[in-house]
Length: 201
Image (cartoon, rainbow, N blue to C red):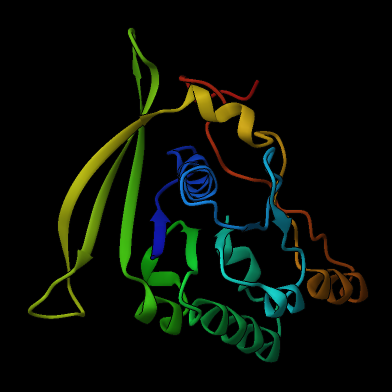
């Protein structure tokens, strides 16, 4: 599956990626790749070239826009998208990526995306933080349009121990070199909810 998790900051995008990755690891025994730190077995993706070595498995790309923003040259952007598409051409590969707005993603990435998911975090006295995820799929009549499919929910608390909630993503090494030459900062802060009231812990 190729799924885009979209929404505003602190709505549950990162933890929803973790949810899918852990399910693939625990249930389907898939190799896991990610551009942010996890606390279960995974292979970190911290360079565009690293995507070329990706085997069958599941790839989580948090804040994917930061890998495709204006700081990257067009050549690097094209290489990144090409590697992503190549990796996903393998028969047992999944991609879960987050974007604030789906329509801002690269058109090639949008064209191969099969599911759009919009999470929202709610506080419940019995269950604590619950993440509800509204899922959309392409219309069978018109593949350029999206239609509501279903909503599922999961408890957030069991997932907090599976990733570093205070860490950012791994900036691509190629961009670090470019930014160092240009004198730009490359650290990206992860956006996610720290507690039910959305305050940092």
